[in-house]
Amino acid sequence: MLDRRSLLIGGGAALAPGILTGRGSDASAQAIATGLLPAQLALRAGVLNLGPFPLRDASCGKDYSIQTLFGGRRYLRMEVRSGDNASWDKAGHRPVDRAEVVARAGPIGVIAYGQEFWQEWSMLIEDGEPITSNWCLLWQNHQLAEHPRIKVGVNPPFCFALHTEGEPGLVVLTRHAAMADVQPNGYIKPTKVYVDPAYPRGKWVKWRCRVRYGWQNDALLQIWRDDVLVVDLTQPGFGLGYEWDSDGGHGAYAQFGIYRATGLPTNPAEAVSEHRLAVHYRDYNLTVGPRN
Image 1 (cartoon, rainbow, N blue to C red):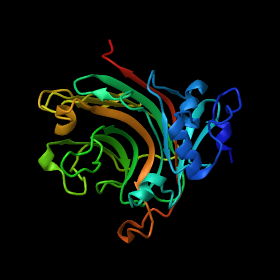
Image 2: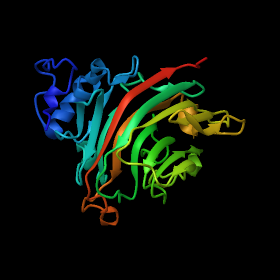
Image 3: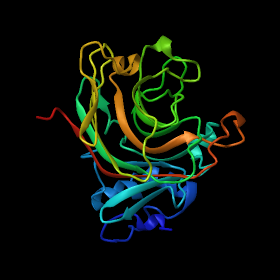
Image 4: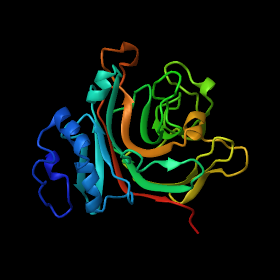
């Protein structure tokens, strides 16, 4: 198993003293506080290209949570096991497992409403035990602001998920909501824009997305899978995002990795994710502005 302190630079350079000295939740907390962490410095290894957008660790901080690996090409490997609950999830009594990175630091990395951007990456879900979580997100654009009335985080307006919303395979979800559309627990009913009930495991799949958030039915979304257009929502009348984010001048930011319902005893109704799950990511690129 790779040591978290060795996950930094493709050339094998050692971690600078004092950046990340512990393991587990302490290491994760220190990484978030400093803004210098294994996943962020994977940028230097050519794994990711997020331009000026810094990455932050959003995992439970286990040695296996986020790894930089080499298999002819550098890539990130994310893994969760039952009970991989981050410190802030424990504090909020949220029964989730997570191993993610977040492309945001304060206002940096937030994409404003009405601004076109492109995201692309390749993703491989390791072979293994069945995916049995009530829901499991693999990639998302997350909204910036909490709902102003209920004061809780809500579902992401755009995400790729497994075994979610009743779908056994991969499903791409979008959400478009006014304040009144949100349930007290933060749930917002999504629209399924793409479904593959037999999504492969053990195989790299390339994804590319063209996105523009728009609250007043002025959004757009195009998705290519292995260079084939599978979602084309470019006609007037498509909405993407949330009223309070748009009105408040906020936006969305990229977040990817594994985030799923856990088997913690705090919520027996969701005690279904007892199995290990690992996903690989490579060639991630995010650019802001239209392309020719």
